[in-house]
Length: 192
Ligand code: F6P
Image (tube, rainbow, N blue to C red; front, side):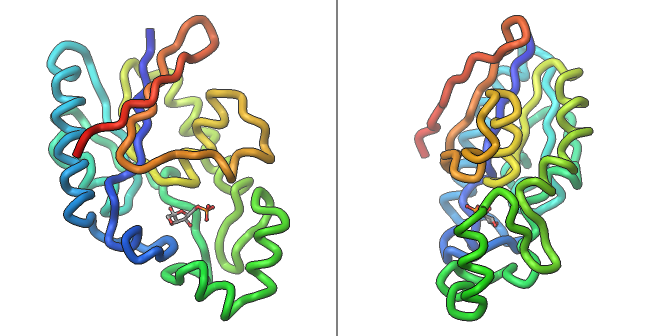
């Protein structure tokens, strides 16, 4: 059976500051997760074929750095582009762009940041990645909060309106194992 290991990148410097988007490095805790994740995956990759897909952003590449398996950096896995709000905290967004903040709150699924993207936009760009993923054997996908909500929503048949609120915690592997055309889910929180 196919197994897909989804994980967010380890905690980044921007996660620590509560800032949106950007291309920050991992925090010291995030580096610990990168280490724990590679130990976990390397034990499996010693027995079975394994591929690793990251985004093009530093925090996912740094998270996968010690995994011993072929890696691909996939642009379509990059995090939601927050346009004019990149680098702000949610409080700063609310102060500077109160109307945008309210619109996003009213319809988080369809809200598109000015010069940026919506969740629906992410789903559109993910479509080719999702079909390519179904052709792989074992894959580790090191991604980002919004992108992983969309991918997990796709595999687990979530309702579209629930997607932007799905919980995808840091430092946790979401392991999907196929059986028939469905997937079994396990959440594996790595101690760091
Ligand atoms: O805060 C981390 C982050 O990945 C941001 O880069 C991104 O804009 C956000 O999460 C997506 O989550 P939400 O849609 O809940 O704002």
